[in-house]
Length: 636
Image (cartoon, rainbow, N blue to C red; front, side):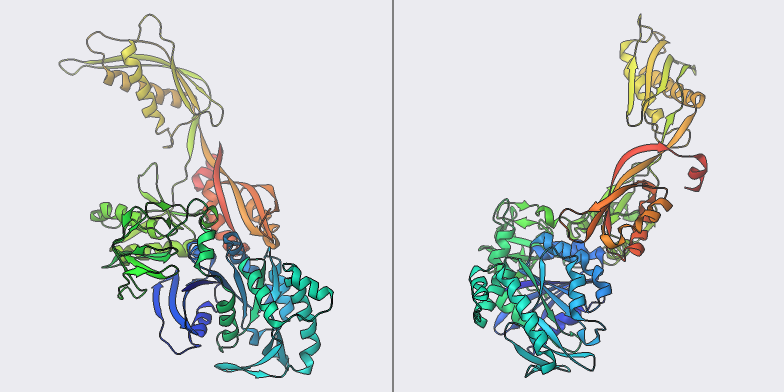
C-alpha cells in the first residue's frame, strides 16, 4: 500500500480531487473522517492499494498536515488556476519542502482559467525552492482549456464532461508551444541525469521510457516538482495524475528512511481522534515487520487494530499498510514507534507554536476534575494544541492555531466528553515594582488571652533593574531578630510580593532586614511572618509602585509580498518594528522582527489573518517588562 496526502488552500478542490481519483474505478472506499481536520480514504487503482489523506484547508490545519506527511510516500498540492492566488499555496509548499516528501502539483479548475497556465506556474515558483516542471500544456478552444498534451509521451487528450479524456491528434495551434515546453522539461530533467544530458547535447531523441525513468528518479529524490493540469469537478486530468502517482511515487521504504534519524521506526502515527464509546484512536502506518494485535509497539502491547472503518479486524499490518489502533492509549499522533519506545518526530515534523490563547472554565463545577483529564486527551490527539495554566487564577489556558481551531476544540469537549466550558481572555501578565528606596518599621503586637504575638522588623526596600528579579537579605546584628525567625520574615515579604497595590505580582525589588526586636515568650514564626508581610505592604504604599507590562519579541513568518504591509499593522499595536529579512531556506518568505506588548498578541493573530490572507504565523517569546501608563492600564 502507498499513501499520499493532498494539501492546498481552502476551496481549492482537494476533496473533489480525491473523489475523482477514487471514481476512476467503480468502488466504495473505506474512510476515516475527522470532522474539520482530515479524511483518510482507502481505495484501489489498477490492482494497487492506496490511502489518500485529505487535510482540511486553512493554515490552522497545517499542524495536522505535518504528521500526515510523515506517514506519506508523496504529497499532492492542489491549487487553483489563478496566478494572483498563488501566494495562498506558500504555506503548503513550505511544509512539504521541509518534510522532504516528493510532491506533485495539480493545477485545478483549468477549465475556468482566465490567464495563461505558464503565468500560474511562474507565480507559484516564487514559493517553491525546487524547480516546478510543467508536464502538460493546455489545449485551448475559444480561449477555454479543453484538453492537454502530455510532454513526455507527446499524446494529446481532449477533456470530456464526467468521463475519461479522449486521445486526439495534437492540434496545429499547440504544436509549436508543445515542442518548446517539452524542450524546457527535458532540459530541467537533464540537470539531474548525465545520460539524458549527453543525448540532448548530441541532438539525440531520448526514448520515452528513458524520460519516464528520469522523471521518476527526479520526483523520488524531490529534485523537481512536476505540475499536472485538470478539473477535478469535471473529472478531467484524474487518470494522468493517478498514473503518475502509481508509476513515480516511492514505496514505504523511502518514508522509513526519511524518518530514521535516531532509530528505524516500526510505525508512525499520522492522524488521531477521540471517538465517543471508542476512546482514542490513532491512524498508524506500519513501516516494518511486526506491527499487530498484542505485539509490542512504543513500549507496550497494541490492544487491537482495525481498518479505517473502525470495524474490520486487522490482526497484523504488513509494511506500508495503514490501520486504526484501539485500546492503545500509549500511542500518540506524530510520534515514531519502535517496539520499545515512542520517539519524538523530527524537527520538521513539529507543529507551529499555537498563538491563539483563551482561558476556559467549566460551566458546571462538577466537571472541574473531568476537564483536566479531557484536556490531556485532546493534547494527545491534536499536535497543534498546547494546554497551560494561568498563574493567577489557576484556570487552564488553551493555546490553539487560530479561532477556528479553538472553536473545534470546544466542540470536541462538548460532543466527545460532555463538558461545556466558558471562554475568557487571558488576563494580561502585568507586574509591579517599587519606585524609590524606602525604609519601613513595623511592629506586630497582639494580646488576646494566653500567649500573645510580638514581632518587630525594620526593612530597607529599593528597586532593581528590569529583569533582576526579587532578592532578600539581612544585616542583623546582636541578635535583634533571632536567626531562626529570619526565614519567617522572608516568607512574609514574599507573601506581600505576590500581590501589589494594583493586584499584580511585584518584581525587581531588593529587601533587606536591617533591625528588629523579639519577645522571649510572645514571638513566633507566625508573628514574624505577619510582621514581614505588613512591613512590605507599608513600604510599597510609601514608595509608590509602577505597573509593568510584558513585551514580547515576535518573529513573524510571512510571504515577502506582505512583509512591508505589516509595518503600519505593528505600529498600530504600539509595537516596535525591528526590521525584516528574507528567510534563509524558505523561498518567497521573510522573517519580520518586532517588539510587541504581549496583550496585543491576540490582536496580531487576527490582523495577520487579514493582512496576509491567512498565510503568515508568528512565534512570540517574552523579552522584557516596560512601564505602562495608568491610562493604558485602565483601557486594559
